[in-house]
Image 1: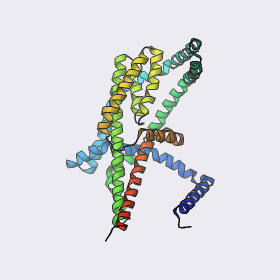
Image 2: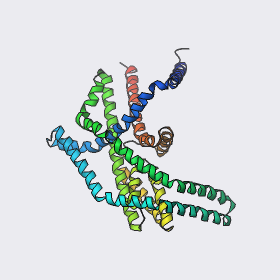
Image 3: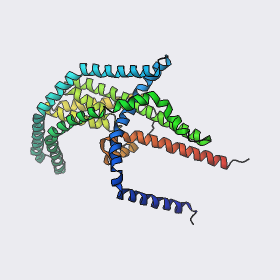
Image 4: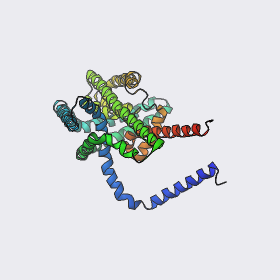
Length: 359
């Protein structure tokens, strides 16, 4: 019986649960390690994203005989120049819109509460089945309105914390640009024969998935945010630049990010002119159709090939486990796991074919 697959699987599950239980009971031992990991992992991730975004530039320069440190220096000059140009050209309008938003936050909150009161007054004229939905929506609007000021302060605080955090990013970024070819050999040098080849191929596939996803997702987000910005400017929506920047970051969340980004645009359109809501919805619909039918297929192709239902499930689970960071990392982590599982399966199939081969 002990050789049966079901018995071995059951024992493995029980042992795994016991190990997890013991780790939970002694988690205080790992608290310092967790604090250190949290301090390191985010700068490491940002450094990795910057590496994948700038590695094509480094490859282009080194093909033209630019030395490694020269390419790194040029990349930093390009990044610093880009940040300076962005600050000089876009910084003042952003600062102006942020100040206006902070100054007008009480008015926006009052307008949303007034909208809630109007909806409650009109609900008696609607069929009974709609009353409950209106009441629920009104309560949510009031809750959102009362929290606007706190969210703005929290947003500004998070920006300040991010600036402090980014001090660590150049450290990881430089060493990734300098020694990225040494990472894979330092891993697969501990293996021999076919196992070494398997590890080498798996690392290559992981690198390809991460490279395709990060470069493609940032390019798609930038294009979509530009379309949204142009559309909102045309209809005269207030805080169009802030909303476009928010859209840029939300679009990093696959599938549902663009629909999250439209929520503040609709609320601001309501307070500015209710007729603008129709235009905001139309621009968002057109932008997302262009993205799903033309931009994403041509840029991303089938680099990950994940079903939308799988994406939604991953985002919901990751959001409950690790919050916003988990939502951002869910899809690439799943892509890496999928590559590893696919390579394991292919290796097992190869072993099976070899073992059953007729000599």
